[in-house]
Image (cartoon, rainbow, N blue to C red):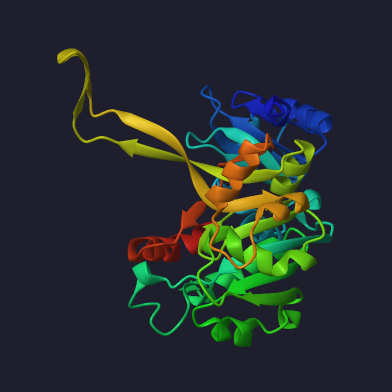
Length: 348
C-alpha cells in the first residue's frame, strides 16, 4: 500500500505548511493528524483561500481552519456506497480510515466514477430452497427477499453492474418464475440476463454445465444470497494476473472458545489457554473460473464447488484464494437476514 504520509500534516502544522503539502500531493487537500496519526480534520485549498480572505496569516495553525466534520468511510464500505456518497456530496476525494481513525487510503472520484464494460459473464446461483429462512421463503425464493428496499438478487446485479459487468446467467429452480418475471431479460436494469433451470438438485457447481456453450471467457460465480462490498473488477484482475484456474473468495472467520483449552500429551496437561480465539479462512461463495475448467463439470449431475476445486488440485491445477476484507454476509439464517437489513444503509 502506498504511504499516506504525503497526504497528512501534523496538528502542529501552519497554514503555510498545509499549503506546501497540498502543492506536493496534488489532490487539493491535506489531512490533519494528531500525535497518534489519527485524522482529526481536513484542509482543502478552498479552506485556505477563504481563511486568507478572512484575515488569517499563513503562519497561523492549519488546525484552526480545518474541517473536523468531514466525510469518511471504513474498509467495510462498498465501492458503490463510496461512489454514491462522493456524487451526493460533491466530494472529489474521500478518506478511508481504520478502526483507530488513521488514514489507510483515499478514494478519488475520477478513479471510481466509471469502469470499462466487460464481456465476462456473472453466473448467479439462485435455485436453492431457502429452507433455513422459512417462513420468509414460503412464497418467494431466497434471492428475492428484500434487503432494504430491493431484493438481494437485484443488489447483487447492481453491484456487478457498477464495476462494468453486463452479462448475467441466473440458475433457477425453486419459484424461479418469480425471478424471471421480475428481471425478464435484464433490459429494464440495463444488463443482459439469461436463465438456466435446474430440473433436479445439481449442487453449487453442477448447474454451470447447463450454460457451457455460453461461457467463452473467465467468469464469476456467486451464490444468490451473498451481500458484499468487494471490488469485483479487482477480483477478476487478481485471478487473471495470477493465472489461476479457479479463484475462491476467502473470508477470515474468528471463533472464540468460551472455555479454557487444555493442550495435553499422554494424559498430561502441557499448557492451558484461557478462552482462546482461533482464526480460519472460510469459503465466501464467490469464485472466478477460467473457461477451461468447465470441462471438469459433469452434465446433469450433482457436483459442488468443493468437488471442482479438488479435481483441479488433483490435476495439478492452480487454485488461488482472494482475501475479502470488505463487507460480506452469507444470508443463510433469519439472524443473518435481520443483520443485513440493519447494515444495508451503512455500507451500500
